[in-house]
Amino acid sequence: MATYETAEAQSATRRFVKQAMKAPLLEHDYERALAIKWRDQQDERALHELTTAYMRLVISMAARFRNYGLPMSDLVQEGNIGLMQAAARFEPERDVRFSTYAAWWIRSSIQDYVLRNWSIVRTGTTAAQKSLFFNLRRLRALISDTGEGMISRENRDIIATKLGVSEREVEQMAARLSANDRSLNAPMSEGLDGGGEWQDLLADEGMLPEQDVMERTDTERRVNWIQEALKSLNPRELVIIQERRLTDDGMTLEALGVRMGISKERVRQIEHQALKKLRAALIKKVGDPEASGLLPDV
Figure 1: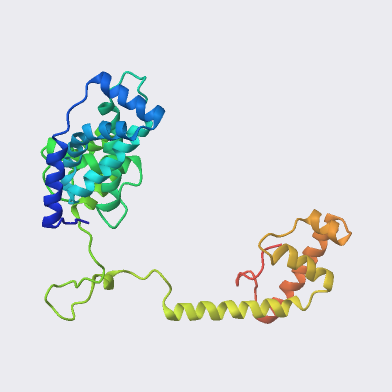
Figure 2 (figure 1 turned 120 degrees about the horizontal axis):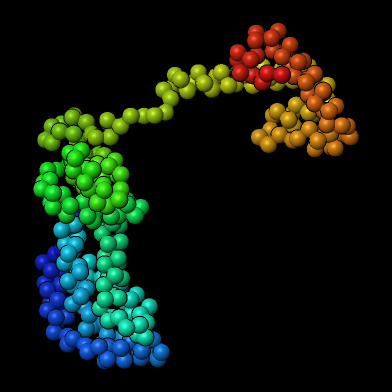
């Protein structure tokens, strides 16, 4: 989902980049002192000086992702978020330069932004997909596979092995990267009236109207048959059938026996007898109830 910057935004970005490049680099000891001031004293001046010195790192990192069609100004802003996160978590005692630590946070922040905004369809929801998204084009270029869309089986195997993913995932991501977002309301034929829209090609997985009517009619008929058959049961048999067969979470024989003051074996016998009565009533009404799916076997 490519977006575009206005001329004013581009000019402002260029001014920002030019200003950022003027910030002086920091010596190791001075950088460490600034980081300690910010961590221990929450000195905002120290934070500002520390982050300003490495704004050039954000700009450099953002430039690597310009080919994804997103505004440079947005990429820089997302990189700044990563830079601030790095400053909040940096431990000066570790003998690591702040730039080395911050680079990971900046890259991660920009990558997450690209994945969220490259397309209206969410891309890169797993680690494998994320790796493919950012490395597939580079690897295809390295193996001289410059075609669009489909990748040869041999090249799929090379890329899958290199990134530790399946060949199917490589194929799916290649197809995803080669296709732009398209509105389902867009006409299938440009400039032609009555050509239909792309959404017209989507298959409806629901039942056809006549099938829906038949299904509802059959269901109502079966319900009526069972309700009539239940009238053949005495009150105790009706309770057992309702609790054991006509609820989502049927009661156990033991629980029902405790409730009714009889043994679970007696409950099983009554249930068996009631099912026989129901089967007889349904056979008299509609034929074999097993063939109709109305009763389980006993």
